[in-house]
Image (tube, rainbow, N blue to C red; front, side, top):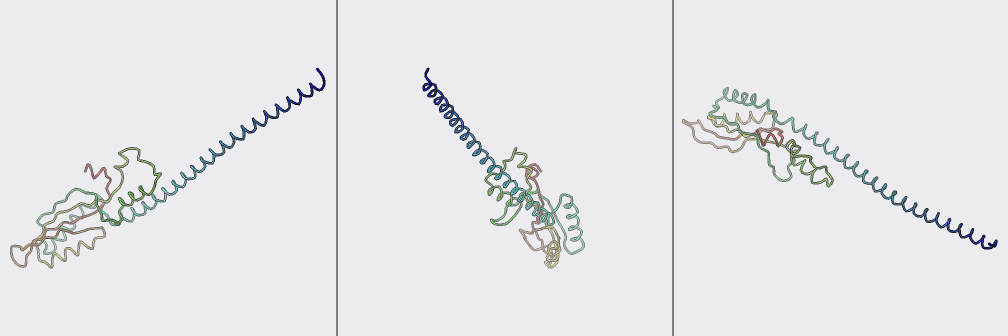
Amino acid sequence: MTRSKINKIVIFCVCAFIVMLLVQSFNKHLDYTEVEQKWTAKKDQLAKVEANIAEFKQYIEQYETEKEEFDKYLFSEQDIPSFLDEISAYAGSTEVKIIDMKTQRFKAVTTAKGVSTPQAFIAKKRKARKTREKFKSQSDVKRILTLAAMPIKIKVEGTFSSFMEFFNYLDEFKQLITISNIEMASGREYPSLKCDFTLKIYSFKTLEELEYK
């Protein structure tokens, strides 16, 4: 084999080796680019998740703040018996005579559009968050707190002025109280009147409590 042929073979082998290195380098570059793109996508996803977590924490803090503010004006379960005893005692010290007083079960409050309640607050935030975590089970949903009202049907007798005094007394309570469905009729003797009305007190209840109570 001549020297010229040997040189040609060597040059061919070197060129082939260089081409092989270039091909491997190109493939490595493609792999690196693909990994880098995936890593960038993962970092973007992580940043979005962290942003969602921060936003969710902010919603929770706002909800807890609003709940704490609402709590000041709502009745707890243990407040109800003493409240009923208190208004009965007050009526007994005036010209208002309570004929009948019936409590009913708590029911979720439905409000007009635009009125803020914890229930409406949760619904609004759930709708606004596209990536909000789904509830794991139906029991999680039932633990959501909602504003609920207990209607108390009350029948009383007395004079018109004593009724106004009684209603003013109820209005002075720190907790939220509403009076509706007032109906008055003549009593047995003038100026005695009969009055039927619905008094509602409010509290936070879970959906489970409203369902099974």
